[in-house]
Amino acid sequence: MAEGPFEPHRDGKPGRVVSERGKVGPVHKVHEGLVAADAGLAGDRVVTSGSVARVLVAAAARALRGTDCADLGHPGPASRFPGAPDPVRRAAVTRAAGRVALTPAQVADVDAERVASWFVDQYPRRSYPGVVIGSPHGAAVHLAVALGVPWLPVGFEMTVHWAQGAVDRPGAALDHGAALVARLLGGNDDLHVRQVHCPASRGALAGATIMLAARWRTLPAAYRRFLGDRLAPGAPVLLLRDARTWPVVEVGQGHSFQVGSPASGLDPVDFHPDSHALRQVLRSAGGDAARWEPPQVSSPSGYAEHGVESGFELSARDWAGRHERILHRVLFPRPEGLSAVVADLYRRWLRMAGKTGDRLVVECGRLLDPWQVVRAGLVPYWCENATRRSVEGVEWWLAGSEPYSSVDVLPEPPGVRSPALAGLPQWLAVAGFGRRRRALDRTSARGYPVASVPTRRATEVLRAQPYDLPAPPALTVAEALAVFRDGGTHQGLLVS
Image (cartoon, rainbow, N blue to C red):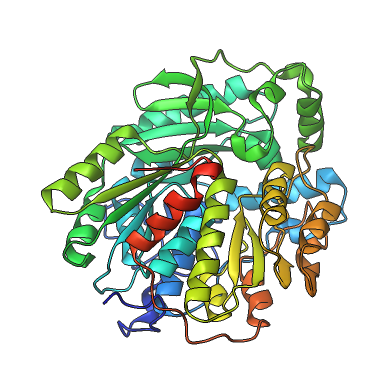
């Protein structure tokens, strides 16, 4: 029988989960005890603090240990200047980013294999009835927790100093990033690096740091060891792929570049020099649209930064075949589709266990806590971010769903201003779908959209929900796939 998703501290070593709460020292410092001599940078130094994949692994690992996310995250500098003029706030955010970003010299010390090991080492050492691997998505983590299995990302994000950077010079960003990527790939030829220059989602940070989204081209050795040692005999592998596309500049072997991002809530045309939306974005970030000259696009429809490399999928299939496992693949063209299907799955799962399944929590970005969700018997719907597009997705889903008695909403302030963002009235409209309880977290709303809220805020809110234990027995992958095939078609999901 599959283990339940919550067996607190079963391995007796709860302290081994790496905390996101510790302060980061000077950029040249490597955390003592985390890395051997001359072995490169430790994983927690390489992966961008606060990046979605990092937060999701930490949240999933804690849930499988039977703990919540109370120690995750700390308020950024924007939380201390919510009412300050934009130049003051931008300067504070830029200084804070400079303290944690990698230096150009450190890029050569990045070892992607160490990063993979750091991810898998956060999970309890026990046998699992399966594993979920794929693009970073909060609903994928909720799915993994309901299955009682780990979630592993197919890549990770890094930010690197750009001393003479400018938010309105994407061509200069590409030139600077090319040298960094060449240095990175010199020691990590198993990576493809997508450089993303997006002032709409990163604000002033796009002019102070270079963002590199590294994706493994094959299943890393640490993942192969983890699957071989920790998966029960016959346990399946579930691969979830973000199928969104975006115009791409192919720079060279292993390096590609994109201006903007689907996560910005804007469309590729909005990053054209004549775009009114771009002028608004750059003005807010301290830039000038007159200097905006994006590089020539090589491919109008490549997979966006959170896609899965085809070689990675082939490698995972090869591993599964050689070890007599089944690999199932789920492609989702929109994050909202996967969120809706997993929410429907949770409702059915809770009701099969005799619970109401009528209490919904709408999470956003890094504001989530899978353990508290199951502890309270809640249905989770995850919004990728605070854009109108994401919020409209949950509104449409709620409009077509059986009503919920209560709806709690946790809007994560993005820390930037953009014409694509949802206003607080739209978030309040989501909460208004609750028949008896309609709650919008006031702390998250205070200073929205330019403040910042730590992940542990979600834990604080969800801890106030009444207990609804015991947790339902863990789902099987077969049960989850049956729901995906039944309800995912109209959401555009492709299950194979």
